[in-house]
Length: 270
Image (cartoon, rainbow, N blue to C red; front, top):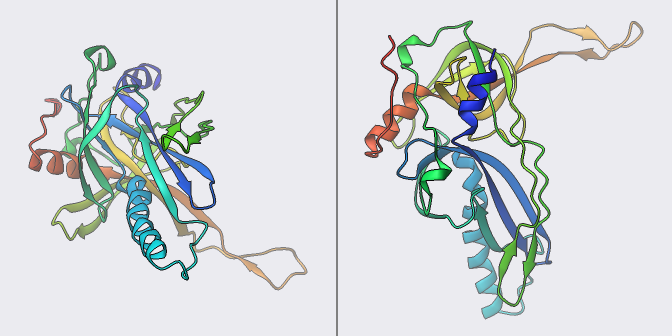
């Protein structure tokens, strides 16, 4: 059902790997997903992927304080270095806009070549989304990255990273409205019947034609309202939960991108 749609989506969807080094020398990585929205290098992802950068700025201030006052011990987990790999060699992040509450980041990536973007996304009209329609999410969970860090040049080497897109389909269950963010953006989300996996964050949610319906952000666990004993002789009660995937609704995506002056293509199908 989603074979051709997944092929289309893969043309503009990329991994976003955050590389970090801490005071104790530990080098780590976390991988999410982003996708381009036009051929000018503009792209979107989940804002929470950049939380480690905020932590890095805070940790850097603490490290400076420790260097000025050696009696203050450094926390081994403080981040000393950070870098971002966008799945394409030779590109760099030139601008970043975050609405952390909505969980949307709008990026401008420089150095993208025409051959890197042979297909561009089409955003589905928001009014045409219906409960029960088939949707699919994709991204880069289970990525294999083994980075290293050169202390002399203070640079990361991502090594031989292995990235594979992993689509998960389901149906659109409902639209979730959380009001407005502090930046006055409407916080609309589409809820899917299947949960996302770590690494899907920031990736597109799309229909069977490959049109973008949203962007994956998180899962929510809802109490099913059922109670079962763990065993016939056990007084402990189990209350099961259902796990559903959430993504920023296409309406909110289009509104923010339009507000930022980013050119996108919205389907003319009503």
